[in-house]
Image: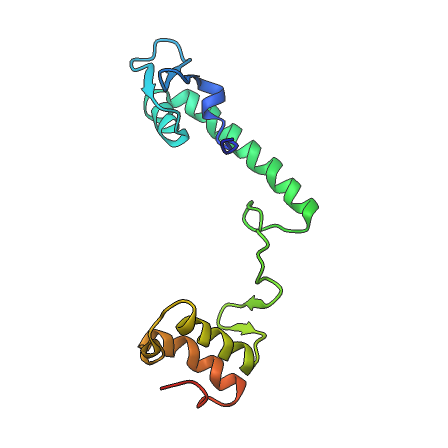
Length: 152
């Protein structure tokens, strides 16, 4: 089953033929009525470039849909730039602020994760000497208290 389309351009201005994989513009006197596929951005660009008055209708409809969607977001208790916030498995563990990241982790969990990197995931032990890994691990090990428990 395909994704739900959130761009109303195909419903408003095009008829899609699944057999030939073509979209036909419904706007009369269209100079280029047949287009390959049904990608919403391609169809939107067609309307924007060839039918400016119809494009205004599309913009108003998209704005109306966004406002309706943001109203449903308010019901959920989440609102961020008219987009739904997705809740992931780490949201209860990590809180992000502008300048810092707070993680609930203890020494044992960190050691087990690092051991798993080497033993199960097959990473070389020298990965802990890499500058990028050091940038990740140093703040964590410093906040835990003992920064000498990882191999260097």
